Length: 317
Image (cartoon, rainbow, N blue to C red; front, side):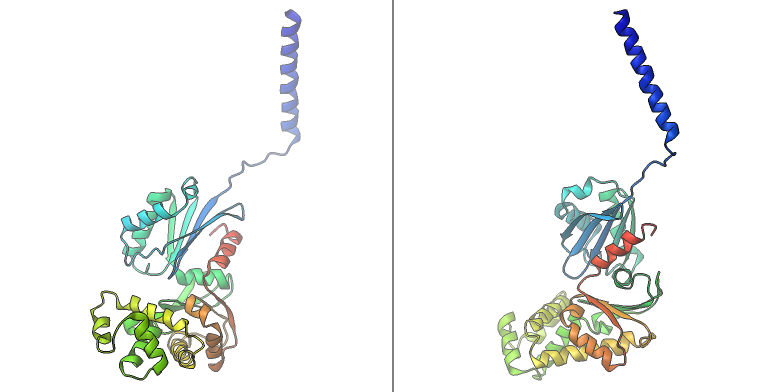
């Protein structure tokens, strides 16, 4: 018994001595503090989510659109809770970044911020789709960023922040180049019997509406802009029709003149995101060339891929 007790004491002493020697031999290292961030980008047709940590993408998901213009704080919270995988909630995030449209007022920013804080208990930063496009495509390069989806926007980006932008004006006062304005242009031609006969007939059949009731129907709609966006989807199905090509060309020309040429557009790279830019990329590039710009840097459906690269490269942001 005495020998066993002695051996146990000796063994413990030797192990502790070896550990002390190892501590002295190894350089002092700072404890690892891997930060986890949640990146969210919402567009016209959905919301993309990604968790990044230690300079790599950990998980990705997609949910419905988040739009603080139409949705209350509770509706946003409910959408997130019911649609996002449970694994996204079992994380401790250093920061949550939300990029989306319709976040222009402090009230709407606060709505999104409070909803996400309640779900993830983390610091939340709410910013625009324009900044997402700038960071996602231009990265650290100065240039002009454009968003061409259901609505349209443009800005000058100096490589770190947006320094100037042309106000959208909404679909009543602006939104040139957008799908809503494209739908409105076609509806105007149809009402005035200026649209091509084949497309007009297909349109009335597709939307189950008669010529006599079209105008009244549009003005009676609670959200006529959403109907105009649906009309643009119909036109996309006929994108090879020469009339549609010409209509898109006119729409993009208006956007370029009113929303791009106010910057130093001939000497700066131009990038664009959104389904209108993506679906009619060739026409957009043709319009840029007509106005003396050969610098369309990239056209993407969403900025998310490049945005994740930006955040992985700049963990300090």
